[in-house]
Image (tube, rainbow, N blue to C red; front, top):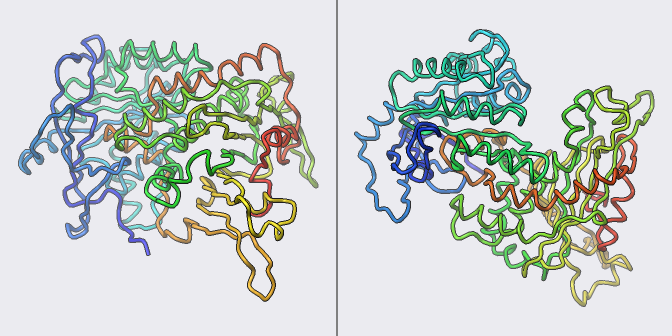
Length: 580
């Protein structure tokens, strides 16, 4: 039975972000810091409200203890004394500014995630949260708005209402334009008042459209950056529409921010099963030797939603399913799945291996892709509108709401193995999963028992990311009895059965990592360039040739063309087998 314990509780847990000694602060123009000066080494502590008897060593997402002093560039550094730790902790403050605070993402995800971190004692003792947006709003109105979406953990340890009140008292609001340095200067004054002369560490979360990222970066870096601590900026996808626009966005941001101040977030990398992927592979001897072309026949990355755009087609029609899901979420999972063993769990070591995978991948060709678009469908008394029936979508739109693709990695480990991706809206089910189909057993003694369909005898490892997180392995098993009848059974790890604690939301893990300076789950600029390089030629060809997507009914399994694409490489989509 797994032990229930607060993930961040400790009587005196010290955070030592591995990045602080590496943090390259910009020149006076770039956040008023000198790149040549070495930033001061500091730590801050989280004081638990629990008894000291419950203390344990807190670890960040890379598995390293956060109370260990990070050694960078061969430096040897002695652990800080308790007196010095206590002094520095009391003199530092964390300020989180949510830019675009009145938007849906902020209300539904970011503020609830910050509250969950506070509820689990994962935030430092001195912290302040500011909302920033163009909407005119008072502090009380902001608190009223975000209080509607706050929830407490299932394993409650303290009164939920009291915790909410305590959290909301730390929340404030500043109205202003996104391109106004004067408004950000006013935000800076309010931040300084709340920081009370302490060392200020500031995190900006840009929950805004990408066309105003640079305006905010310029205004915030010039007028609201920290003068004596660190400043970091979380940037939400989309990171451009293709290689050119992504590169231009990166170059523009780097005029005002250093690369290690930019945290490009992909929330799928913070999901529990995606986090567990490398643990499953690298810490279990039964899997690591099999993780290659010698034993794996194909790998499938599947994403499906059982709803359409339904009034929110304006944003989606500008990007489509390939940019929205495949180029980022699914490709990031693929890179984690296929990478070589990193030297360490340090962020740069992991991201280096991911970049190697992406650079080894072939550019997608049109013949290896199927695109679709859902049409209206009537089921019983209910009518489901098609994509172009949505009033927010142009009537003649060719934007795909479904795509399937076959990708290949040209390296020694994966040569010839098809990596199939499938993503779509308005399908028959909601799911996200990774399916690993192994090769047939050579000279299988029991092939007569399986008949002509040897695919039924294929072992398959499935990681169900959502919903109902699970890991299961399909094996062949004899049915009890005097005869020799076979059954395909599952060795099943269902998280809801095995673990009684609630699984944290992905945004909680990623926000905590950004606060700690842990970059492993964030996307580096060269990684982004390599990812766009795979998809950009295909996207340009689809749009220049005006390829019409294959229509499929709302609530179906998607276009028939996806089955032909899989069959081209002797693959069956695992989610259509009907035995899950």
